[in-house]
Amino acid sequence: MQNAAKKERPVYLSLTDPAWPVTAIASIVHRVTGVILFVGLAYLLWLLNLALSSPAGFAQAQQTLAMPLPKLALIGVLGLLIYHLVAGIKHMVMDFHIGDTFEAASSAAYVVFGISIVLTALVGVWLW
Image 1 (cartoon, rainbow, N blue to C red):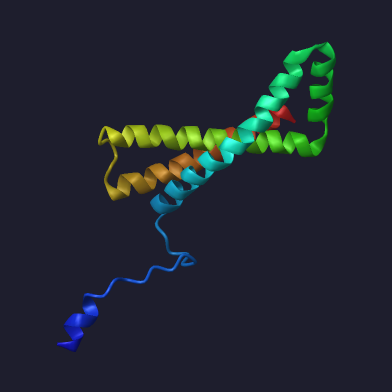
Image 2 (image 1 turned 135 degrees about the horizontal axis):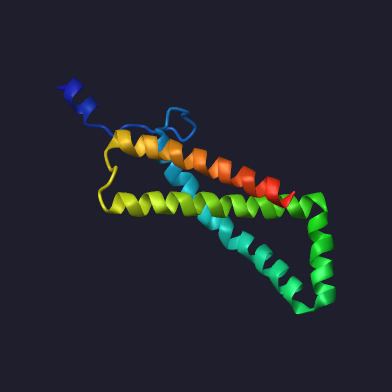
């Protein structure tokens, strides 16, 4: 009797457990990038406004992006945007029940991470 009651208890899931499936990690990262992009887009809009305000503003935007930290921030925001876009496309494909098995979703999560890293590196090389 005591053994049966013990099995009905909820399972304890530790947030620090490194054994999460890659699909869960990809989903969490997709949500986090969406939240960070909300703030990061303010930086991109500020740069766009500065560059389009006047020829002097365009020169100031160029000077700003010539410094390493603002350039890294730009690459970071664009990397987040790339990941969020690629993961969003994966989610839309899965909404049509294409690749919605666990094995296919795991493979797709690795593909999303890989494509995002490659595209972010290409954008970084192009901007640097």
